[in-house]
Amino acid sequence: MEVRKKNCSKILYILDFQPILCYNISMIETQNWPEIIAKKDQQIADLEVQNQWLLDQLKLARKRQFGPSSEKSKLEGGEQLGLFDEAEATADSTAPEPETKEIKAYTRRKAGRIGIDKLPEDLPVEVIEHDLPPEEKCCPDCGCEMHVMGRKTREELKFVPAKAVIVRHEALTYACRCCEKCSDHVPVMKANLPAPVIKGSFASPEAIAHIACEKFVMGSPLYRQEQDWTRKGIPLSRQTMSNWLIRATNDWLKPIYSAMHRELLAREVAHADETVLQVLREDGRKAESNSYMWLYRTSCDTKKHIVLYDYQTGRSGDYAKKFLGNFKGYLHADGHKGYHAKLPDDVIVVGCWAHVRRKFNDALKIVPESAQKTSPAAQAILRLGQIYKLEEEFRKLPQDDNFKARFEARLERSKPLVDALYAWCAAQTALPKSPLGQAITYCLNQRFWLDKFLLDGRLEIDNNRAERSIKPFVIGRKNWLFSNTPGGAKASAVLYSIIETAKENGVDPFSYLVYVFQNAPNRGMHSDPLALERFMPWNFTSPAA
Image 1 (cartoon, rainbow, N blue to C red):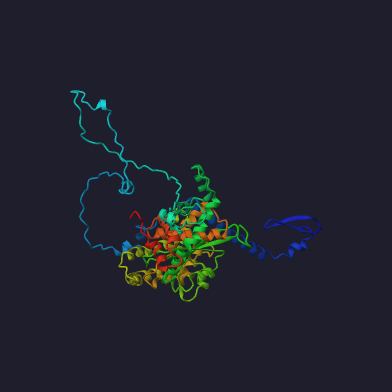
Image 2: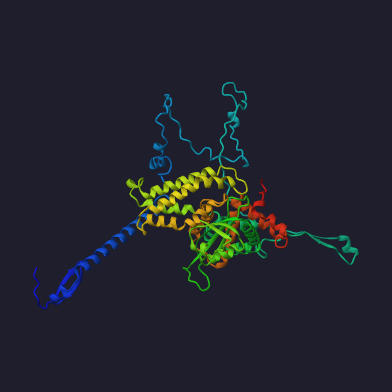
């Protein structure tokens, strides 16, 4: 195609369709076309990779929003044998076939929830007797009076809504009438009034315990509780309820929290996790800034279960270092770099295999269903499933103080599978930014910490124990959304700690809080260490027991 040499205003679209204004043919002849084409090809390839990554993220986001939340893969179970060809490897062609016999087909009713939904035997029984009218108790044939020959019984569960009453404490004062008449001194004796949970307030232990359980167990925000109190004819503002919770927490629950903190630091195995919290009124910070609620708890090596929340303004590992203080031992955590960089050498961080499985599970979700069974992500999940299946077997082993049997079984059976998984990951080729590539990179980069669970039988394979304990806070946060002040956030941390620790030890939170608020103001909790020990959740016995 000839191009005439003349000055003209002609717009040419070259490759990327960006207009270039050319005035003479000499400009076109000087272009390095191979270099331009190679550059544009590279740009197209990069855009295709970026586009695929965005499509994967969109598909994964939709799976997370609308798909099932369970991480259990349908590939786990019997299909493991098909993937690794274990059936062919273990088959014996010379073995005789087992004898068969014909069994008649039958149908069976699907088991319902009869074994779960039962009426408790210790509930009080209210009997309502339905009788015939007196005129119908005579025999219609002979007219004689009939006798009772049987009863037909039907039981129902009746719920009686909570009721509010005013408790008026009256302390009697006594004086001597005889001394009043004949003496210049009259002895006066006064009965002792029990100390209130909050001085100068009409709050009762039951009311504060009810408000706390409604918010921190049932996830009902204070504004909803305010509406509920109003419907019952009791005007009780959310500000008053908030003041009650903060005051009762600072006076009576913080000493228990501090004692549980000391007990936790004396342990050799612990778990840690953290989640986002928004606090509106923090000095020097915007309302939309993220704060964090940290969680620390005991592991499986103790019968005194402790769950502690700690409110902080950030996610730096310095907060974990400060909270753990002189703790020495193993700390289960996720891959957060703050744990690895900030904690002292006396604290050995143990990685979480559940996070590894979760990343491979995310990689599997974006694979078309027809190709899932043969995908690398499915292979990784099935390898991890073998390791977790062994952990289920090891839980049945004898559990002495150091779980020695589990420690030895892991070295013999789990370690070869773990090493094989690392070798498999190293042999894979995947784009670094793809979900599969990120899962493989995470597994290999975290190897130093993931292997730590093999060091001691008391350790667990993952940090799910901490994630289960922080879940009540996450669920409650969906309802009340944020904390108004740092003081409220700190009180919430203490209340969540007390309530979740009570639940972990099989104690009813409401009964326990009532017990603390009734007895702590009158038994010298702050001055007597022995009295404080009696208030620990694991030492509490319900009055109904």
